[in-house]
Figure 1 (cartoon, rainbow, N blue to C red):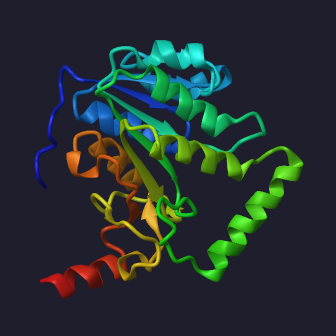
Figure 2: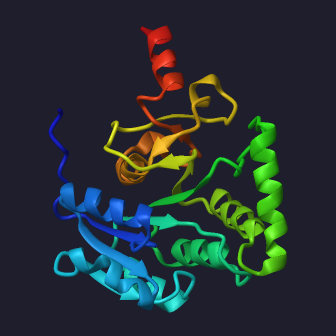
Length: 237
C-alpha cells in the first residue's frame, strides 16, 4: 500500500459533514493531515461526536449563507454534498454560498449523481431515466426537488471557479477498493458496473482537492475493482 500523502497546514471544509458520505470524507481528510471544518444541521452535530475534538463544527442549514461564509473562511478546499431535500433551493443555495464566499483560489468539489450532465453527451439507461423521472415527480411531496440539483450544477459550471463536480454511481458499504476510476460521460463501458463503495466516493472527493487535472471536470466514477473497471484496465494493459 502506498503511503498516504499528507497535507498538513492546509484547511479543508466539508459541507454536509454529518451524513454517511460526509463522515467518510472527514476521516479521509484527517488521515491526510488536513485541518477540517465541518458544516451540518444543528440536530445532526451528535453524529460527529467521534470527531468533536479533532474538527471545527458549524451548525446550521448548509444553504445558510452566514454559516457557509464563516465555515469556508481561509479554506484551501471546500467539499460539498449537494442534496435535493425540500423545495427551498437547498442544493443551489449551498452551491451559490460556497461559490460566493470561498477564497478565489480554493478548490471547490461538489458531489451529485450520474443524472447530472455537463455537455448533454451522457447516455442513460432506461432504468436511470425512470429513476430520475420518479425523483422529479417527488417534488409534489415537497420532500425532494431534483431540479434544484440541476440549478446548482449549472451555477457551478458557469462560475469560473476551480470546481470539480463528482458524479457518483450507485453506492454500497464495504471496505475500500481504492480510488475509483472515472469517465467524462455516463454510458462509457468503463462505468457499466454502476457501483462504488461509499468510502471510495468520499476518497475521490478528498483526493480531487489536490488533482489539478480535475479542475472544471465532471467525472462520473465507478469502483476500481468492479468488473467494468477491471475489464477496461486489462484492455489498456
